[in-house]
Amino acid sequence: MKPLEYLDRSLMCDGVALADVAAMAGTPCYVYSAKTLRENYRAYADAFGDTPHRVYYAMKANGNLSILRLLAKEGAGFDIVSGGELFRVLKAGCDPSKVVFSGVGKTSAEIDQALEAGIFAFNCESEPELALIDSLTHRRGVKARVAIRVNPNVQASTHAYISTGGKAHKFGIDIDEAEGVYERARAHKSLLIEGVSCHIGSQIFDPTSLLKAVDRVLEFIDKLRGRGFDIRHADLGGGLGVGYKPDDEVPVISEFVAALRARTTGRGLEVMVEPGRSIVGNAGVLVTRVLYRKRTGTKEFVITDAAMTDLIRPALYDAHHEILPVRAAEGLPTICADVVGPVCESGDFLAHDRTMPEAFPGDLLAVCTAGAYGFVQSSTYNARPRAAEVLVDEGVARIVRQRETYEDLIRGE
Ligand code: LLP
Image (cartoon, rainbow, N blue to C red; front, top):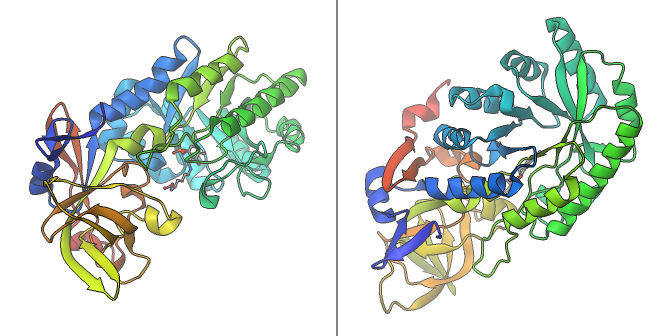
């Protein structure tokens, strides 16, 4: 079942009318479907079956505590990229031994914080980082499990800003140079060098590039094992795309996992993945109210109370998000309009030249597939308090983050 469906012309999320949610939480607000979150997580977990595996949800996609808790309950681990994300994971009561720490610029304070918490492993991206983790670990008299993130030099066809696996990218260590890095890392006596990790980008539709990277990583693991490294886990990253347009041909999670299993079975490896968008993307929607209609010259505008501050993906990546009326009235004419927010920039838009049903001031619109990289990338530019977040579970809508207040805006000043 899709997360959003019309019932008697009213757009529903898991049996709750979005109009009712908007009345309760105000607009703009993010609304998430617990059912869809669980379904997406289970699509990964079930497809792995008895293959030793762990699904580390890349919480950068959406770090709301209630979502973390829900996924932890399902058995998820978490891929974090900052001390702040670790703080969230711990606040949500998640098990730190199911956390991997990725990212190209971990500070010593963050590494220390992760050692203190007792995370599963660090995905390391440079030799100085390995040396720093070794020295901080040594000081504590413990050992830290590490994987080195290799860059398999596979170009993923996606937006340039979210492609990470090419030679010119800041991420990982070139796979052709990585053997030497592993050899030199032997000198770090406080490190347990047990993994290899990789991640080549996000919003990838064709799993071929992902699987090409996996093949290179597995080949590399064979080489390392040949040199005596006890490689036990392969972290194959995230990146599976989601459908933003109705006709997008979306990769099927279970088929992708089956391809991973086919490649890894019998290798004595724990297979790890770090999906973010494919777990939470289609589980969320941004509900906004039309403030004004306006026409300038030949352009038609629908001005909404949600802006680039709430959902920056259209402005930043020229991303497409479907926009649906929350109340689908019959016989409305179609318009072609820019859907824009109140922020004082021409870059503030949710859609350009969108063909959509006529929308009037006061109408509610649902900006679809906004669960991933939506709220987490919001800002308070123009002194706009951040939106509320609502989780719908078993037919009950609950505010899981209050709308920010003006007082929130000036905290610390
Ligand atoms: N692992 C690592 C190391 C990552 O850097 C990322 C995403 C993921 C996993 C999860 O990738 P996913 O399964 O979500 O594709 N803000 C952009 C997306 C940035 C992705 C950053 N890294 C957007 O709105 O499209």
